[in-house]
Length: 68
Image 1 (cartoon, helix red, strand yellow):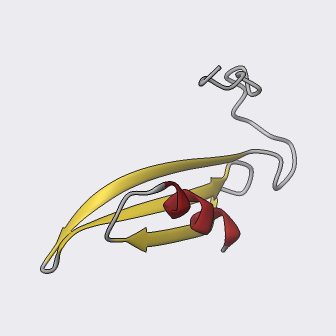
Image 2: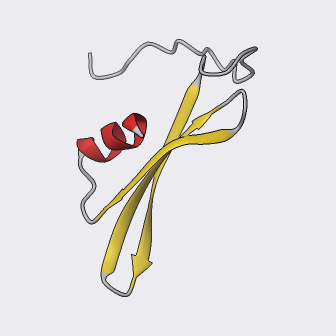
Image 3: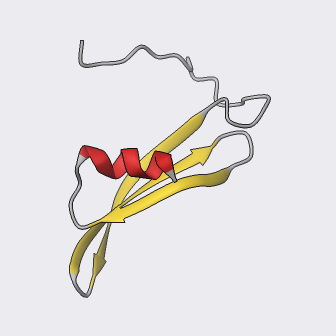
């Protein structure tokens, strides 16, 4: 299956850090053209735990954000 199981089941209130991370990808218009920004946030602390920006939106955009 291409769709993953819903492990969170709408429970977005973890009780400790690093239990649940959420991410998003957005695009930004710059003087050099479009850039893609991936952000990973810890839902407990609401802190950004990783991010990466690139000229292309590829799978490694999110992978690199998770590694930072």
